[in-house]
Length: 288
Image (tube, rainbow, N blue to C red):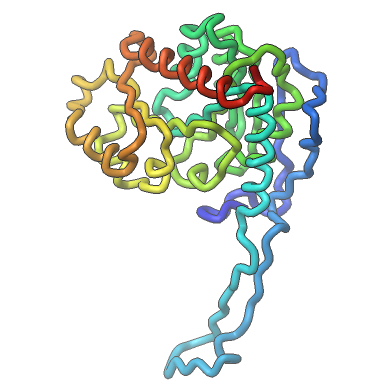
């Protein structure tokens, strides 16, 4: 269960994963086959009455109960994320976790990134959505292999979901893996997937103060992308304010201002990814 909003209610159907022409399993050198439990049995709570501790509340009505978390709720996820990261590095894969609010242009941005990179970086995509596979269908137009994760009521991806999806993605020859997270600026901020770079989008249509409203997400950004720049004038977008807010929350993150629709700014973004992949290959001899 998500620690922020309580998504993934007990008894919900397990997460589903679907692939396009990739129905076979691949041996990745280690097992990713962990059962996902939306109740997260890896953390425990202890409850007690405040009265047991001789707390006097005067005319307080009823009893209050306190829950104490005994084990970090994200411990299992962090452990599996490190396992994913080691798996990716051993293969020389550059991995992006792309996050944003719904409607910020993630899918178009990823599709055009794949198209522009072409043969320079062979790319695979994992897509997370609560219900439909519409984004996955759109991304297949780029020619990239795509695996869909349907999360049901869970409003974020987790490391275990990604590990299971990898079994349905042919990684042979891939240089770049892009994970499109569920559209949400709250819960996904807490879940490491094993990525190299966390890419957070801010659309000009969302308002310049969005980073200030959702600080954990933007503070966690390795890269910030200002999307839909072709709409900046129509939206009366204040560029100086938006960039100041981004730099306040993520001072070390490079910022790319672009429009996936028109292509403006996309070349600089793709060149950045090529350089990042070169650094991955140089750092990981096994992936060379």
